[in-house]
Image 1 (cartoon, rainbow, N blue to C red):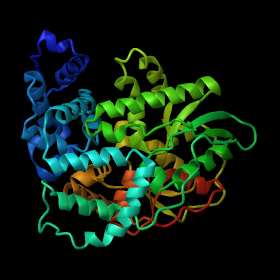
Image 2: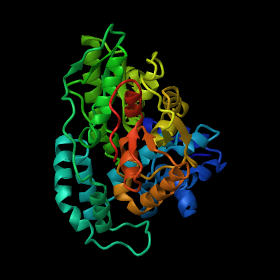
Image 3: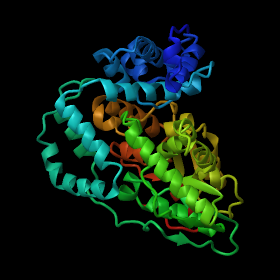
Image 4: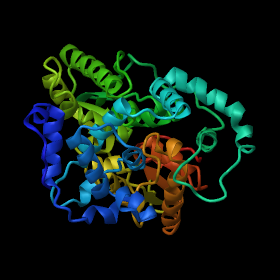
Length: 439
């Protein structure tokens, strides 16, 4: 794709990167076939290729984002399926991230939408605030039934529709808190490695059992686990809302905390059980590339970061404690894992090797509609994607559904009665831990 940035514009590192990305695009259109919003809506501007044109024009002309740019960028899930499909290696992720920052900086949204996004950016990354919000949501759930619902699906959701979606996703009960930050869990037997485990933000409120399962599996196999005390939210939630100042501040804080732990006791890896977080942490090196103080340590942190299944695949695991061959598991491949981190076979192979019958889900490349805060901000598109995903899952008649991302788990569980569990919970069960709970 031909670009026409001025030399002055190209002096900006972000514009220089955008120019490189745009020039790699050859207009082939392969991305349209795997883009969830294009598949659903059939609008060229709701495809990666269409959004690239819009972003290119906005950046080249250095103009404030138009309503059309905002509408179509907002509808993007950042599922990154287009990057898996693209034969030219277009880094759409870094381009759409730039667009979101521009929109947040230069476009004035309606007041109620600004307030809603501000609340999400403030509450979701802070476990204590998020826990309080979930408690309030429990009492507000009856209100959801009274809120008007659209007679037809819409791509322009109202505030009431968004509030209804938020209340519908809120769980009826919250589990007891998981292990506190600062704890160290000793390896059982001879220590073979030492790792940090990301505590997460929403996940530690909604499903602390996931990290507990990871701790069980790791310590059972000789790996010491530390929950680093000064760790923060990874920044993914605010990063995808275009609030890069907040996201980068959180990234710096985590790089500092993990680097201090490396210097103090040493770390062989930084493990993540939420694939959406893992994709961003693995990108810290890029995000902080222009920061003189943090560029090098951020690159080291990104190199240490691994998904929990990625790490477990590299160690010799004990044989399964008991046969699970009668349990059919539908494996839902989270977009952030399969497209963002290019991890597709490893989780399924681990489950198969530990005795489960693993079934691929048809159209596994298409997003379930969760996508961070997407199912709250674009609930109707998200619901259509969820229903399509659930129909595909149901076609393989599973006993359980496994996934590697809490957002996907909550999204899918909201429309199906089959238990939805994390992959590491099944691996914990197979190697001597408790059976994962039903929904």
